[in-house]
Length: 104
Image 1: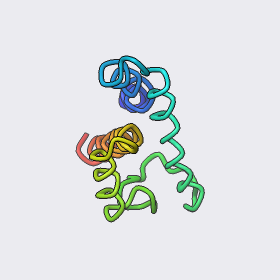
Image 2: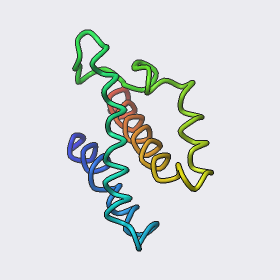
Image 3: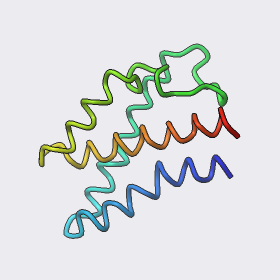
């Protein structure tokens, strides 16, 4: 169940947000939010690259606590808002996954 929710939040929720927040260009907004999944390229720097029990938040460079304020700041500028929403949703999804691993 955890993995279903995780992937839904990464792939489905951006579509829902795009549809309601950007109705005139929701498909474009959804694709941009999906493109923010490229933030996971920082997993290639880890050894091992994939560890299902590792929390991404605070471990991978683009998931670190010091870059997340930049993602939040992107929400406040119209030209970066969609990217900011995608990145913030991605971080929140990964944070939820970390909480599930630790507490459930």
